[in-house]
Length: 335
Image 1 (cartoon, rainbow, N blue to C red):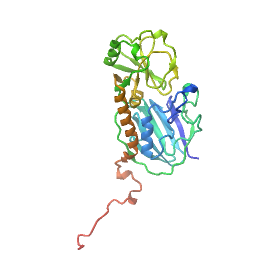
Image 2 (cartoon, one colour):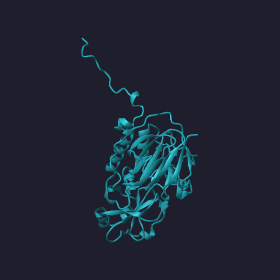
Image 3 (cartoon, helix red, strand yellow):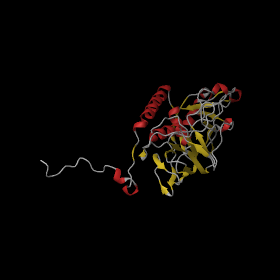
Image 4 (cartoon, rainbow, N blue to C red):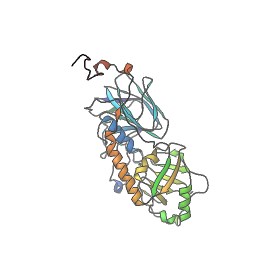
């Protein structure tokens, strides 16, 4: 069986795919990759389905080997990576063979990096998904010594690179009105838009705590709000006035007032804001939010056509002579 051997792993490495949609009524949030765009990028680089499982590496990766030659891709938050000490490109696909060691270090920007394998990680599904959902007790962090099975990979292409936009440095995040937005006075909502926030160190797959200068935010009659359904992207304001943006492993109900909700197209950038990243928020109407969603889905559909061959050093191509380097030559003496 083809396996990925984990000889070292960061404290928050988990197997993730697109999660478990449609289970809120059963008390289980969707979960899945914190940055689903990174999953789609890995699928594009390897030419495979977008629902295959990958390793999500929060802040730090690990050291990995394989039992058989395998294609792999690295996406999401850029991290230092090398094979046997030789640096390799991020947002790119590569080949690893038995005896080699892939090392992935700390994030240089952003929060979540992803290691994709040709054929995907083929652990046993639970409730229709291979994604670890730690809050729900499904799965567990990947530990050193683990041997993760890989699915069959009928393809052989590697050496591709993908140009991606920066979604790892914070910036402007668009939000729409939520269930309790109207309970925040207009001047509170204006102050929220005018405030620059910092992504706190206290963050996980449940959500991100935001810090800011000045007083916290408060809603009218917030103590009388009953617990109700909540979803990733909701911005809850806790009792001390601190905003908390919910992520894929958030609970399914809550009673804190919601000042707004991050639009789905911007949620990957919200999740990828690394510790200390600066963030601003802007309310948009539903027409603008729907247009952003349309463009986001078009981008995802276009991803499989965007990977391109990476420029390689000829001295590092062992089968160089098998390539047709010159073609279409004719003799100068031909008539």
